[in-house]
Image (cartoon, rainbow, N blue to C red; front, side, top):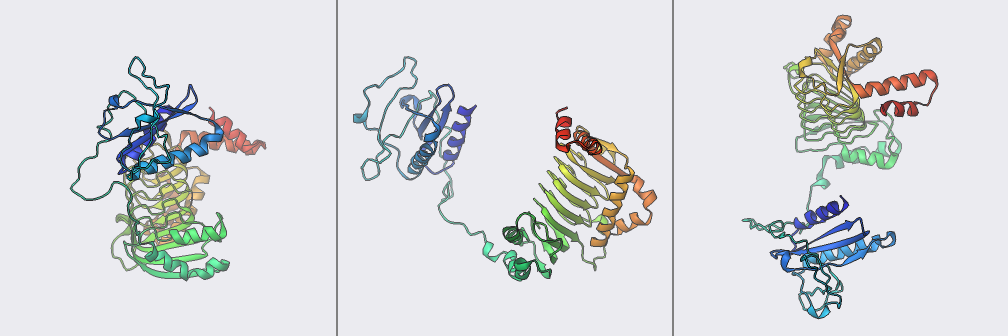
Length: 432
């Protein structure tokens, strides 16, 4: 496995370059050695046989890695190597089956002088790899590797303005309120500001709602990505995909303009993959969202009023609340976290890993608090309707709970009741 892994990794990396020769390395487990293989484009390796193995020891790893980088860099910038027959070692050996034999050779620079890496290595595998390393012709005069610096426009990002305006809060955690317009060309709004908060205050971020930013318009992709604790983004309008990607403790609100005449609970307010990989924080979205809502969520709370296909996919933690309809394949691969869905159709659930439950008293108390908060932050009419007839309407919710996660929660509850170590009890439960 190691042999294959090393070989494929370096072959693929160098085959994508603009080099005239490629190099690969593999680790031989039985002998504990590395072998570097250099393949020259267009040659049948049956015509080019040679190998030299280097001893692999912990003390040589760094030096060997550095040498390999030098060889790789050389191959990226020079012509194919020239084999110096006068440097053939005396122990040249061709195996009877046509396998590997040893051969030292030097690499010549374009000016004809010997390169300091005179012991570059070639290995023969008996395969014609020319098709693998073929360089297809292209109508475009573009390189296959980086040849110029790229300008991603970060200097003009909206977050640069946010950082300047939020300097007081960044200095001494002074509460701050900002209002700015936003367009869909403004992507990852809040991410650079969040990075500055984390840089100055660490992973715990700022006190709740220290920096409150109201945005109006239409946000580009990844609104509030990786937003830390202490920042609230209140988006008045709508947003694209990946809202709250990697959310890390912050709060994101997306709601329509109060002047809008449509029924928000019937309209799409944000795109696909909301809350992807979130680890903490809160999301409140007044309206429907696209597919893969809360995919890979591991710790955030997210509320919306309708979802597309594949909601709760691969969730491992956190909680998600849907105050409306769902698409198909809900909870596919969901191993953790809890979902609460209004008027859920069981036929739309992927039940390979989850069970559906009626809500208990604790669930209902928690859910009512969340619905109240959603109404307070977004002005949701569907939340207001639910709260106005809570005893009856709350009975329409279904709890989506992964079976393994339920076993873990029960082990935690028993351990606390018995005064046992919670982590130990969970490990026992998860081992089955």
